[in-house]
Length: 287
Ligand code: FES
Image (cartoon, rainbow, N blue to C red; front, side, top):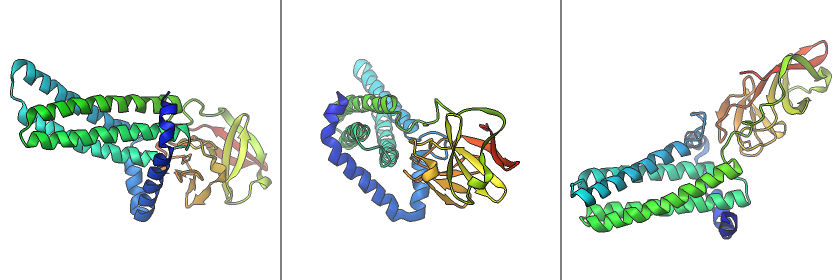
């Protein structure tokens, strides 16, 4: 049902993703670090759901204070205003983190439904911002009514956000349910002569696809499927000690799969690799 409702937002979603891409592109290297921060690459999981908890918690507290004021006649005007103001600011930060994740969404229903989620929450934060200024101006009752409307809208937005995550696995580690075939001891997977120097090369450990990179006698092995959204790392580029995913440019350290730059937030599955008796052998995964 949400898919049907959101298909009309396809143009808006693609436009929004394009604007965010252009915004970060214009910022250059500082933009990459800002993007990493807002994606949560430094945190080990997305920043967005952390911030949504703050926002929903703050606005829930506001509703409770308003109800207590209404029922018991207590005066919580000042604390309510502070909570409303600070939570609205947290809402703006949450929108920024959401937009940063959004620009790398897969097109189609996933992007359309995410667009519906995002713009519903933008509407709720706008309502709360108006409620703040109305209450600041002394119109307590109007501000309270607006806050209740904002709470209903943000609840719908949160529901749609849950749908995006649980149906599409949005911003979920794509290796969560399959870390790959385990090799308890070093296992040959290809002749070393077939592994070109400094060239990401796809290989297989049983059913698990790996990407191998050879530098002299040193070989690095990571799982082929990018943890962000499943991109093929063997089609990526090398940059220093990292491999860059061809889909959304996450950088993973070759030596251990650590995230150097997002939008990925979860370490890429890594194997130990070596050249032995003319064969490339792998063991692991590590960690
Ligand atoms: S699939 Fe998005 S960065 Fe790899």
